[in-house]
Length: 68
Image (cartoon, rainbow, N blue to C red; front, side):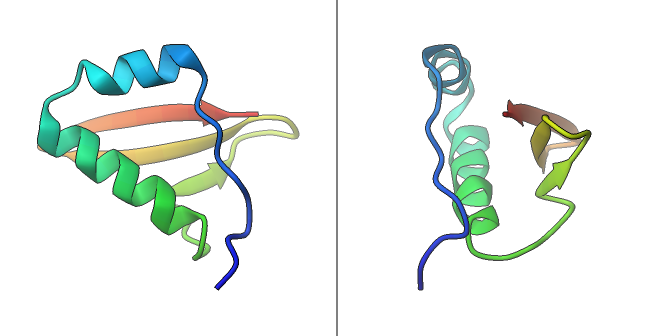
């Protein structure tokens, strides 16, 4: 199956993710990969004409990465 879009993380995003605990980081990467193949507004949604958001809930905490 071909992904709907490609993901390229900026160095700041990689630094942010690398400073998280292992479980949170793994769930975020999992959700990003999942969002590439299925349409789920809880994982990836359009905020305006230019900005999209990856969102992951883990341990009662919301992690948000913005996409352009």
